[in-house]
Image (tube, rainbow, N blue to C red; front, side, top):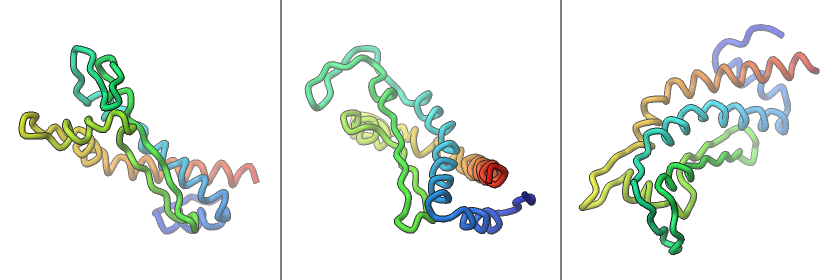
Length: 142
């Protein structure tokens, strides 16, 4: 298989795989490219020293928000665009609503925003490298 240079060449190679396999490859590569950013968010997310109750009334241990950082991926209907959403599970919404954005009493600590902004170019580089490797692997097995 020839060397893949640039995003146009990657896009062309991806479309050659077909919509089903191409979409799956696109989504997997994007998820893997975002993994270090999610780890950084978890590491930098503040946590208290005592248990607290969630809005459901459940008593949870310190670090609950950190353990509930999650990401979800979506693929467009035409399987040409993939999205990754990084946030927290619903019961830990306060990590974004209060800690990330701040309140009158809690200063804003934009952990999610800062991590995404700092790692944006690395995510793109990892994504293109992972996508290239995945396409090459699929091409060699065909």
